[in-house]
Image (cartoon, rainbow, N blue to C red; front, side, top):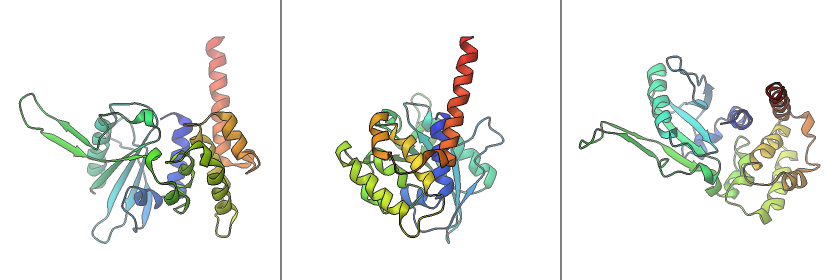
Length: 235
C-alpha cells in the first residue's frame, strides 16, 4: 500500500480495533493492537490485533490492498506463520480489498504450494473482505473504526449525499469521540479510490475543517515530501 492509504487504514484500526474483527465475522471480544513487526522477516504486516477470546486468545492479521498484487496470499502466509511463531498464538488472516482492481483470481481465500504431481504440502486459508460489496447500512451503524468505509462500500454515486449526511449526523451527534474529525480525513482519502476529487470536495465541503485533522496533516506532509523528492530528481 502507498503511505497515504497505509497511514489512513492503520489509523482506522487504531481508533476502533474491535470493529475489524467484527467486520471479518468475529465480533464480541475485547481486542488490543499489538506490534505488527515480524523481527525474523524483513517486513511487517499492515496491522495485527490480539483478540481476547474466552476459548483462547488469538491474533487477527489485517492486510489492506488497493491494487492488483498476486503475491498477497503468499505474503499473508508468511506473516501468519511468523506471527504464530513469535506470539505462540493461532492467527486468523484477512485480506481487505479496497477496490475492484485489487480483486484477482489468485486472492480467493486459499493458498497452496505443491510439487508437480503431488498433493499440496502447504495449504493456507484466509478470509477476503471486498469493501465494495459490504452493505452500507452495517457500516453506518457500526463502529467508528470502520465508518469511513461507508462511501466506498456497496453504494452508488447517487447515494453518496445521503450517506455523507448520515455520517455527519453520527460524527456531530451525542457520543461521538473527540477525534471524530479524523474520520473525515480518512473518508476523504478512501473516497479517492473510487471518486473524482471534484465530487469528493463537493460532498465534504464544510463538513469539517480538514486542516485541523491530525490524519490530514500526515497526508499533507506526505505530499510535501513527495514534492521535494520530485524536485530533487528533476534537478
